[in-house]
Length: 329
Length: 262
Image (tube, rainbow over all chains, first blue to last red; front, side):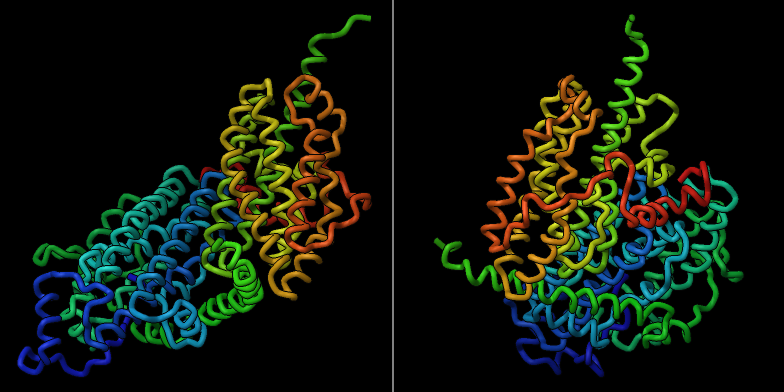
């Protein structure tokens, strides 16, 4: 899940009686599972919420290239290098579709990127953690893309058409990344030496809790969820999605022969789910505020890339402008 | 005096091995340089294109190095060749190991290499070594696109703004001295050309010069001095200072954990 704590700007959800006719018609479409398309009427707050959520997701794809770029020059074999390059390329592509989906709501990519660089827009907290050894490339694929898929599979049914269609496309590629990530870890655990096995456990120890934080705050502390659920921008609550992720991930962890750093994790026969310990919410909110280990570096790096490239983009525009007539002819 | 046939065929296969390393090492090192751009490109579209071209190059390198390993038949494989040879054993062209610099520097390096690469691969499609011809035929389709893109960037930046033209001109001037090596044929290449196995750089050179002259003219970039002094040595294993650092980074895991499975 690449969007956390998306503000809807709504204090209280309106009842049907409180809605205008337009709002009622809109809500009826939503309730009847009819997709909202760019030209359809929509409440301004629905539009703003979508912009925030989709752009957060797009920014996450782009910022998420950085922790992988940290290892792409050091991948251990040609096969692993090729896989990682292909994954990074997919992520840039996802960023591009999502920015396009967002542009259908009447904002420009440049403005969205500006909001990222100024700190106004967020991206997933997970990418503010460093990638410290090669196994992180496996663990990011398995846990981070895994957590993203749990959310995105549900978002394939989100109410806004262009977002839903982007999700369908993105999910296919993400599942592939997740399997590839898991295979990196499995190879290191099954065929690796002790040092490699330690790398895997170390990566899981560092990334486990931040992966759970990707689902956002507990439902009780998620003031915007109700409106997003009513609008079917979100389809399931943070806690439901987090539980599903844990339930499907622990058996895979056992196959690896690794552990997670949670002494309270245990199967609960009665509920049919895993119980788990309390997330360090203070850390989560601090990372969102900009105080994670890599927040500053990530944003500075992205801003520098776009600033340093300004002359290239300007030149491309100037060239196109000069040759507009001959191109049109 | 009788010719020792074994010695002759040994030296032939050594020459072939060396030539295959030359073909494989250049795309590997250029692909590695392109990886350094990850997250730093001037636009998202360029992130995709740079990674895409890097992927093609490293995929091609894997094919060449696998064939080199098969030719040497000494227990090597493509990964051992890529990750355990030191700089003096690398046979890539000097041009590909030059630093990324700014986007114009990267594009000037790419364009000069792409044009050479495409014409060389086209020649290799007619190699009498079937393995070489097959790899070249596959790569040629990818490299045709690489050249189209880098040519477009030379033109866009050259004939763009005043600043971009200045940067493009500087980039072309700076990298020029590394282009001559591409066409220098030592005994290894000459022998293989005679055998019908390698690309004849004498024939490629004029095509390359024509291509470059046309593009630079369209891009309003002054053509560098064709008789300028040229650097060489990469194909014989004498490199610039940059390569050692490229390898130190690229080979880190294989060096730190020898013989591990990844």
